[in-house]
Length: 131
Image (tube, rainbow, N blue to C red; front, top):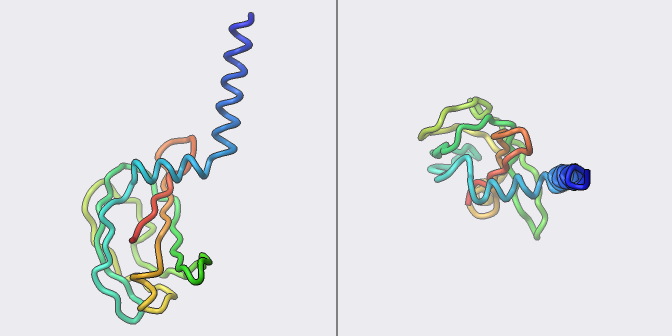
C-alpha cells in the first residue's frame, strides 16, 4: 500500500512539474534538440526576406513569431509569408518572400524568430532561429 501511494505521489509530482515548467521544457528541448537548423537569411530587400533552412525532426508546425530587440525590449514584428504555415517533412528548404515589419538594417542584427512545433503530447518545442 505504501509503495502504491509513493508511485501516485511521484506521478502527481511529475505532472505538476510538466504543467508548471511547460515553457522551460519546450525551450530546453528546442535548444538541445531543435526541429529546424541552419536557418539562413540570404537576402533582404524592402523588408522582404529569403533564405534556407534544414528541418531535422518530424514535428508539426504550431506557430511562429518574429521579434526584434530595441534597448533590451522584445518587440513582436508582423510577418506576412507564403508557405510558412505548411507542415513539411524532414529536409532542406528554401523560403521567401517573407514580408516583415522591421526596418531592413534591424533584421540581420537585432531580430530573431521563435518557431513552435508539436513533437509529442507533453509540451510544445520552441526553436530559436536566427542568429
